[in-house]
Amino acid sequence: MTQRTLIIAEAGVNHNGDLDMAKKLIDIAAETGADLVKFQTFCADRLVTHAAKKADYQTKTTDGNESQHNMLRRLELTHEMHKELIAHCASRNIGFFSTGFDIESVDLLVSLGQDHFKIPSGEITNLPYLRHIGRLCKPVILSTGMATLGDIEAAIDVLEDAGTSRDNMTVLHCTTEYPTPMAEVNLRAMQIMHSAFGVAVGYSDHTQGIEVAIAAVALGATVIEKHFTLDRNLSGPDHKASLVPHELKAMVTAIRNIEIALGDGIKRLTPSEVKNKPVARKSIVAAVSIRRGEIFTVDNLTTKRPETGISPMKWDEVIGQVALRNYNKDEVL
Image (spheres, rainbow, N blue to C red):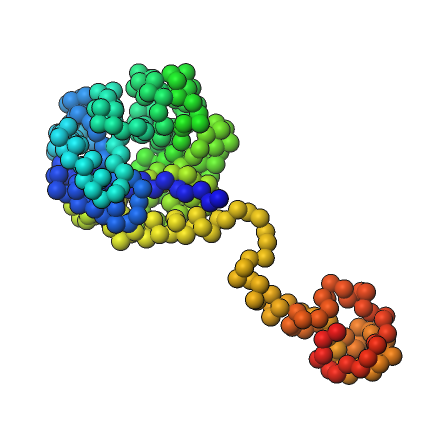
């Protein structure tokens, strides 16, 4: 049976703190066929210091004079906003998902009924946070941007020691740069993580375009996460590196096609090939007119389409045999 990829449409903070915009993002995700639409749950006061600088890509896409703290404060979702978004997701038949960036935010999501949890790349070395999520004993998606194999192993060990089994973990390969240069994707690292840790793997994609996410599915990703936006020209840290609606739709469609195309790996004649087989393959045929009693030789036989006579794989058995009847040129044996 073909494994279905969990496709997470990452709205993130592309709602710009506007509830109506967040609902529009949910509508788009639902229309594309994504499985989940994901937001980010955090409190700026708990996430960063007032002196924390923005990342380079954030400085380029937002007010350069604004602190990271002030930027994040504008992008917070309140408890009530969460409840409205969850209800809207239910009305559109798409799953709500959010990344909690601190322990209190994780607890808020627990209280709202979320039963699986995403650990963002920046928290992979946050021991108390990892332990808290591990103790929930719920499915965990661990993103690994900026991490070494050693960092990933340590985080998995913490989660496991706290109570979450590896069977409940999916580790996402990720490069934390927006957008990610193709030369830094290193998609094969996803397969290495699968081999090294014995966990399901996926890919959190920050590249421009959709081809790398599609390739990840072909290489075994069970989860794909991709940012999307209403408009890449909107002000905000992540819009520039996000897909617009028609691109998200194209990605989802392509992934679903790849899932079907991967098949079960057994090489066999497919139902649609049956009608083409006799047309495309060959038989042994008379290269010239052959009279009854003549010996079949390499000079009076050849191979041509269609496959309605003796297979050319029996060539050696036929050569040297006596013709039991007359054959016209081009007549199959």
